[in-house]
Length: 191
Image (cartoon, rainbow, N blue to C red; front, side):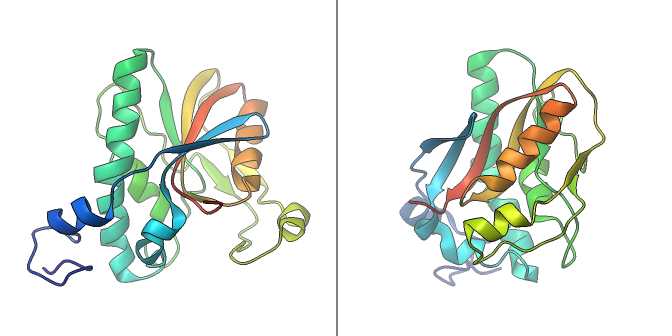
């Protein structure tokens, strides 16, 4: 296979040289409502990779980003905190052959971090790309949660823009007595 960035032969979709040169996490934090959102990259840094989301190549790229960035971050948090928590991907609905958020959460392989796949799904499949804040407010995702109650979780999503989706997801979990510790995303589109 070839690296998607430099096109040299590589055992992974993004070679180690390009990952070292291009993909250095710059962790940012912001509060959206009452939810802390931790983003690993500024959007502009990984935009070309994120734009592959709905393509066959995106499957390999999102799996790589989950394995090399999301999973180590969540596992390090677990090591530091030492308290049990689960992971829930925001709307792991399969579209275009795979669920990109599920690829990020599936990369977490720690035996003490249960990943609750497809327990938080949107009933309204509206696309927010390029839409205004008012449009997002007028067209909520209408999340439905089917997982266990009375637990602590970390939410995982690929991008935070306005934070409306993450706020709505956290609100649905709160209604089911699930405490969201924070959300982690690959990128923050505000930076």
